[in-house]
Image (cartoon, rainbow, N blue to C red; front, side, top):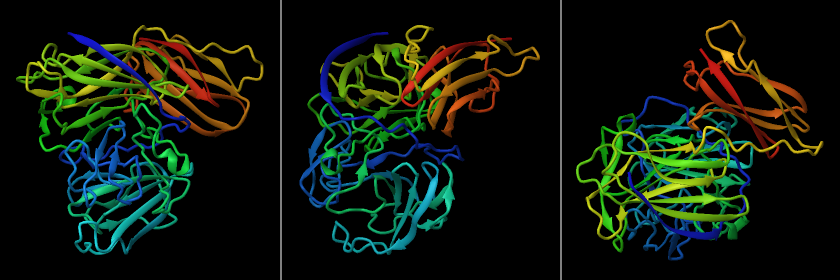
Length: 475
């Protein structure tokens, strides 16, 4: 195992206020399981007004083609003025609600005519918009059929439509868009934000429109693989899926040397339960002629408003089908760290294939950087020690309960993770009234499976405060 820490850059990104809330319920996966983003949000001016410049989520920029979506290089996914993400998938794939909410728009209506490429549209444009009750609205375009009606409540993962190419879609795809503050589209001053966040080292250009800051809105975990919300693969002409690697799938692309134009890129974004020092680990399968210097870029945002970018060179031709550490860094809690990998490698690199598989984030110690209970008697969150602790799986003891006391009505999140930092269970309690409350854990993970014995970290967060405690589970 080898890695080299190459450089560090510091910038400014804006405020972080929104917790991730977009999530997908499991369903029968399509053939490819995870479809690529072909065109992403233009952070420079996402209003479908041509201005000759495209800036993507990592701050990289490109001169946009004319008309939009033409003349753009692969990997840049540029589309001058694009306000959402175009996800390429076949017709008939079910389109799922990204989070629970109320349908406020569901109809076929007149779209742009003629289309930006000068051709007539494929009939009326299908549009579904969901109000998530927190100031955000998810928007879905180009479907061939709609299965919901205005006023209907939907849960995360409910089928709302089926994919197609209505309106100005030259090929079947889903246009997915997040609007903030209003559900309608403003051609001159867009309401859009990027749900994949802003990872550039400067200020998000979208802030110039309505002072909105793009943040990562997808629910994730701290172990991210193909098909998970925390993994995003951008379109390129040479993706090759491999039936090997973590969970039996991975991707490979031809390597390009620095100075050439990148054509492929993917990102991993974890949702870390605690702030602290983490080992960033990768897993890759054994691929013939894999590169010995894959260039992983790690973006870390702190609460002070700055972004640090690290570049790590990792040997993908050394350790196979197991996780190994490529960097150890101090990372913040939440979804404020991202790992990018492209097809670009340094000059002199051996090998011709860059491999994209799984990434996980493991605490550097079995302990935890626990935030101390403040002495201020006016603190908004207090923790009541969980009991029984330890708990014996084989005995007749009741399930462990974790208590907390809050001073104001708020949402409370309880995360339970193992010593590897992997979240095994999550409870989100909305609108909890002031007073003492208790959460009982049935010692099962997300899939309803009993957890193994060991040490678990229980983290309780509310009203901007977070505290953690250890729980020992014994046989």
